[in-house]
Each structure stands twice: as structure tokens, then as C-alpha cells.
Amino acid sequence: MPGLRRRPFLRTLLAGPLGVALAGCSGDTGDTSDEQASATGSPTDGRSESPSAGWSPPPSSDRSASPPGSPAATASPTPSATPGPIHAPGPTPTGTPTRTPTEAPTPTPTGTPTPTGTPTPTGTPTPTATPTPGPLARTAREFVASLAAGEFDRAHDRFTDDYAVQVSATRLERYWLGLTAQHGAFERVAGVEHATREGGETAVVTAACAEGQGPVELGVDGDAVSGLWFPATDSPPAYADRSAFTERELTVAADGCSLPATLSMPAERDDQGAAVPGAVLVHGSGPSDRDQTIGPNEPFRDLAWGLASRGVAVLRYEKRTAQCDVPFSEWDIDTVVVEDAVRALATLRDVEGVRADATAVVGHSLGGTCTPRILSRDEAAAGGAMLAANARPITDVSVDQVRHYFRVVDGISALERQRIDRLQRAFDRLRAGAFPADRVIEGFPVSWWTSLLDYDQVGTAGSVSAPLFLAQGGRDFQVRADADFTRWRTALSDRPDTRFAEYPALSHLFHPGSAPSLRQEYVFHDNVAESLVTDLADWIHATVA
Image 1 (tube, rainbow, N blue to C red):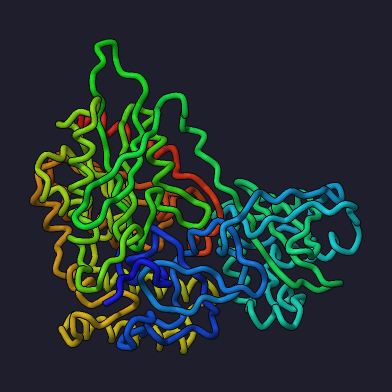
Image 2: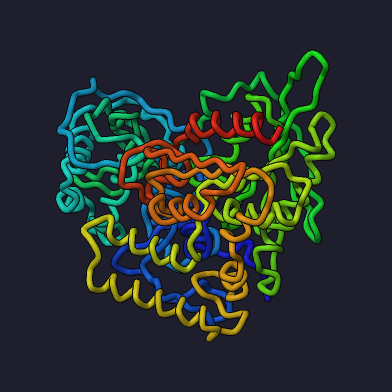
């Protein structure tokens, strides 16, 4: 059967955890019309099960929003849903938008939103030759004022007829909540600038929020809004000292698939030239690149640079499902995750200047869940960090994610309850062995799901001897602190060399923000919190090294 690498799979959790949930955190995903979700599985062989129509995972890894009317990009395996048109992820931008100020900033009404974020760039707007302050800026301000006041139906009424069909008021609300989740409560419009996109005039509104600013770009047709983008650009974390480390390319020689990798190596050692400890970063679900790019975010780049700035060599590599075509027959957690991580550890230990007796696994989401299994296969590993790892069965986590998606805006409707129930019934049949191994459920073959369900991550964590560091964001909706992290704490409370760290304000990507977290938050840029990076580096130096 053909592989999954280039299929438009959606991610839901596992970028966070697995399956439906399994794809959430590591890569891109598309968005879905809340009213018209597809009930068909991923387009593989016509035998897929997709009971969770209406759910699509976190946004795409593309750095720009797609122009009005273009379908949003999708990418990685997991729940099936049909990408819808809005301007959050889409084609990679060809440049940074340049804009011409049109008028002095003036405050606008604050509203009720809560999330935060830094939208992803959409195209490459070029400055207009002669700015015209008046109607364009006024329409843009009034539209953002409606969003800030929580008047999403009123904002939606400003869309042109064509655009209103493509983007619902509910969907509009989700993106605004994503922005405020990432940047904090909206405070005022800090400015309006003119730009052009694809020959049309646009207005770029800078929304000043409690914890940062986010641009909102509008295509305007008279008094109507004909397009909406959330431009965003990636920026390295302030805590990364680029003079403190060097980088070079390596290759992880995995079975049947060479995985390009990047080594971040501390530049200075002590007076004796002592070797440094090292860490291998292991992705969440889906075909992730080495930076685990999600929208405009690169959490593995942040971790690598932050740790290397603090004296830890870090190896990050392209995931097998991103680099090579993987037939369904080979889809299980050992082939896709564990065995490649073990090879990456061996590659890191061969690097001159890295202590072979002080290498650790740092897994995020699915990678964190699989960390105990990796440690059980590589006794030379000196420790394992489990970031946002699910302790519950992946099917429970996946259903929970879908429930959160529906509940976060206006509660769960009767139709949405039916969708959740269909997903639950499909998983019940999966656990009962009612599907053949090559059947596709929520974008993944049954063999993948069963390999996860057969794996006892909690029991394995209790049986390995290497030190463990478990970290959890309190705002994480993909892997829950009250359900998963609590279970880890209880099960491993008497285990020696085990550290637990919870960060109340952080999300599944360990970005700071405001509750509630939701997948649209990933459209906006932020960096992994310095508090996690510092704690992880300290743990590696104190425990692993």
C-alpha cells in the first residue's frame, strides 16, 4: 500500500499524543468548517473509519495563511476532516509583509477573548504607494472592535457574500480565541497599516493584547471584508545564545531510510576540555521535520538552541514519516518512533566531545509517551524526559480532545454529541478487534492504533531504571494535567530518580498564554517557555551527567 508521507492528514493530539490525538503536536494540520465536516476517513483505500467528522487537529506547519478562498493546508495522520478556507495556515510566505502606516493608533473597545498567539504569515503584501487613511482603516478597526467585544455574528455580517459562505462565525470566533489565548486579553488597536496582497488593497491591524501583539490583516471591499489573514513570523527565543554553540548536519542511518539531522554543539567546555552531556529530541505524531514545525512555531529548534546555550549537545532529526514513504504494513510505534530514536542516540554518542555515558532522550507528546520504551531498548541511555506525555490509552485521549474542541465554543450541541459518540463506538470496535489491520481509522491504520494500545507506557516507565523528568503544561488540552499528569504522579510516586514539573500557564507546546487553550492557538507564534528549558538543562546536568 502507498505510504502516508504526503497524504493530507490532520493532526490532533500527539504532537501531543497519538492517533486522533496522535498527531497534534508535531506538524501541520488543516482547519475544518465547523458546520460541514467530512465524515469520510483519510483518502487511502476507501475502507477508512472516520466517526469524528468535524474534528481537525492543530493548524498546519506552513508559515503563511492561505489567500481567501484557498483551502488551508493539511498534513499529518490523524482524524479526518475536510480542510476549510480561512487564512491561517497555507503556502509558505515568500517574504515578510511590509506595510505603510495610515493613521496614528487609537484605542478600541476591549472584549472578552482569552487565548494568545502570533498568527502565521499568509502572503507577501507589498506596500501601497499612496496610503489612504479613511474608509479602509475605519472598516478594519470596526471589524476588530466587533471581534474584541465578542460580537462574532456582527463581524461575520461584514463579510462579502462569497467569503461568508467560506468562513462561519463560529470559525471566526475560534481564531480570535486562538490569538487571545496566545497573546492575552485584547486591550486596544495599536495601529492600522496599508498593504497589498495579490494586487488587492488590505489593512493590517495590530491588536495589542495583555501579553503581546498580533497582526490581523483584512481584505476590504468597500465596507465589507473579503479576506482575513493572521500574518506571523518565527523568531528565535531570547534565551538562546547563538554564540554559545555551533551547528552542523549529521545523518541518522535508520533502517531503510536515512534521516537528515542537526547537531547543536556547545562551543565552550571547561579548562580540561571535558565532554558535554547530550540529548536526542523525539517528535510527537505525524510527519514532523527536525524542528517539529507547527504553524510558525519550531518547538524543537527552541529546545535545541536553549539547551545548547546551557551546555547540552542536542541532536534533532527528520522523522521517518516526513523523510520517507512508509507503507501501512510498517506502521507501528517501534518502526515509526522507537527504533529511529535508538539509532539517533547511538549517532549522538559517536560525536566527539559528547559524553557517551551521559545521553538522554527528550520526547514530546507521542515521543514522550514512547520515551520509557526507548529507554528499555537502549540501556546506555542515561535518562529520559517526558514532555506532555499521555498516561491514558490513546483512544481515551483522542475522544477527550474532540470533546474539548466542540465544548470550547458554545458547549456541545446534539449533533456534536452524536459525532463524539460515533468516534467512541469506532474505538470500542477497535479495542474489540473488529477491524482488519489495514483498515484506516482517523487517518491511521489499525496496526498503528493497536501498537499504541498494546504498549503499557506507565508500566514500562515504572520498570526502567534510568532517571525520568516528566513535564506538563497546565493549559494543555491535548494531554491533560488533571487526567494524564495526575496518573503519572500517582503511578510513579515511589519511583526513585523521578522528577515532576507542572507549568500552569503553558500549553501543549509549552507556550505561555491564557486559558482556554485550543488548536487555533498554534497558528500564532511563540517560543517554548524559558522556565521549561532551564529546568530541563538543570536536570540533565544534575542527574544525567
